Length: 505
Image (cartoon, rainbow, N blue to C red; front, side, top):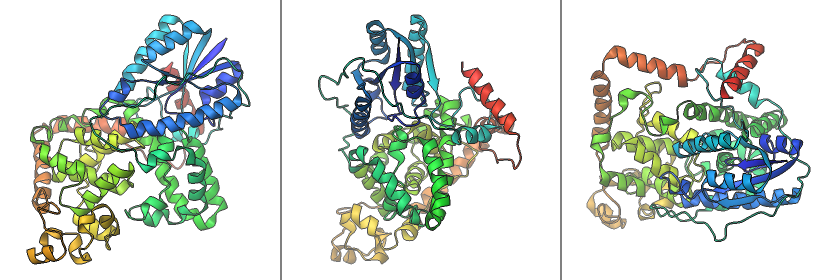
């Protein structure tokens, strides 16, 4: 009797419900499936795979130390699982619930159908405060609190040996149209303990002050997002550790409290995609369904995607992302806003480009955030960032800009943020002629901002007001956050959790 444990975006041993429960019941066959069709999806990239590959190597070492290596098999999930169920006496399949892209959603439906055909139960466990079959958000906050404060699953002490792991016969490398070279972030899979320790020991001190500063956020941010995205780190364990450190380290408590408050939004956004998988491709408020689709400018998209818009901070952020696979939150929001408002680009190709760039791509956070910044939810304010003001405020001495836009490195601070205002004589003096060494702005800033606001207003005015309000009401009911009431029965929240679990059966 063997339990097949399917690792997905949960590449760890600690606080791993499927592994702990399977080990408690008997023999365990741990498996990871390399799915070539997944790696042909337009939101995947080589740099994501390189991080996962190193994570799998570490996971295999850890499982081997317990007695049973990790099986790594390439092929369609249904084919691989059917083969293993024929080869071994598999009595059940255990995994974490996955809130991935639409492709993984359809794959899971196919696996569910297969296992029903084979009469083998598939037991799926939560790994986030995300609930399936959730009808509205009224009790979500309390349900989330109960889960996130719950007891952690313990790592098995040992696993009985069943078979040797099967690594791919040849190294697997996805082939992507966007040529993103391996980046530094993709080489850090083995550095998780060091990253956690350095953040909790000293880097968190400046978290609040530096999180929006492009030249300093790289050091003061936690840099734990890739480990959360692929499950090397349990979000629940991280939140509980953060609370302990807030109490134990007064010198870091302010920064850690700010970090903890941001962690609280993690599951809130993933719940949106879990409740509505079509957020990946369809506007959250249907009134915005065709917004921007007919106005897509491929030249502007290329300039934005490669860091040649003529706006120094925008270009520096994009070039940094292309090189490293990571950006701080403010820069991510600004890139989306600039693309969708100033350049009036459809948010869907914008989302796919950024997804490929991010090592820490988490679909459940990515797509709701993209729509929020693109102004297609109608429940969030439209944040039309002014890239010049952001540049002057967040990188006043231009250290970040000069690093990633070296053609601007000789410009004095007074011209760096708006180089197009320089007289030609000064351009020649500083070795940066606009249109030759660095591009002219692709759009006029003020004109683009006015036009974006006008188009948003017209889009809403052209719809039936009553229909628009009803659609917004439905979005609020299903996706909007709720204030945590000061007093709420824990028993009622617990009952809501059980109801959600019952609906998921």
